[in-house]
Length: 256
Image (tube, rainbow, N blue to C red; front, side, top):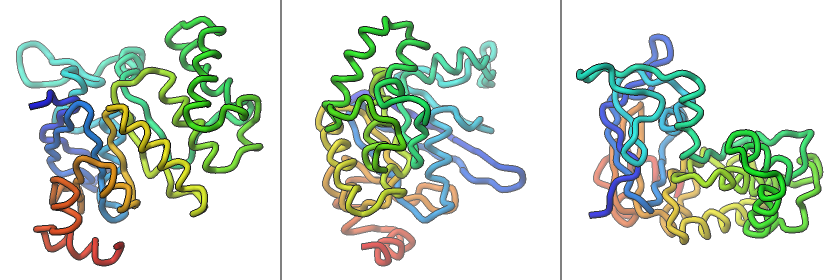
């Protein structure tokens, strides 16, 4: 069996009195592409943000490549201690995050957006980082757009720059939070093609998405979430074509 890249046990997360994640258990193998499906408000994006420690968890354990993210064990017991912001940032280097709204720096060109973290965080030489940025832009089909600013790019092009920016940190895992939901329909295909190519290289990926076709064709596993719980988890052919849970079947009947 392939080693798990992500392991989540007993994950709980609340915002005030609202419990958003209710004891999530989930494992993602190295090289696996997992799609998280479910209605709005089911906890998908919160789960993704907890993996990256952008949200502090209340209870449970999250490990990436065998290492706790954002915490360490307190003494010999099961209690976790929150790490400093600096250490959390170091832990987060192994995780690339692509957001729905791109989150590019508007005052920087595409190349400058990509080289900012490798130079500032990884302390790479600017010349080396720029060469890598050019290679990554070619990889996402934007080799001629390096000197353009976000305002000069389409939504799909911005998202592909965001993917290149995440890849520049050489992450072990890529997290995608509804990467195509803010795009015009004709621009979705280009972004999904880049994600397909990335999946084919063996990158471990967790994708929050409503693109059922992508989940069926590209993903190794699918997890359906509702009301803060994973109700069904398995191969796409099982979850999407022959769901066992009535809530999963009801959801799919409305989106397929």
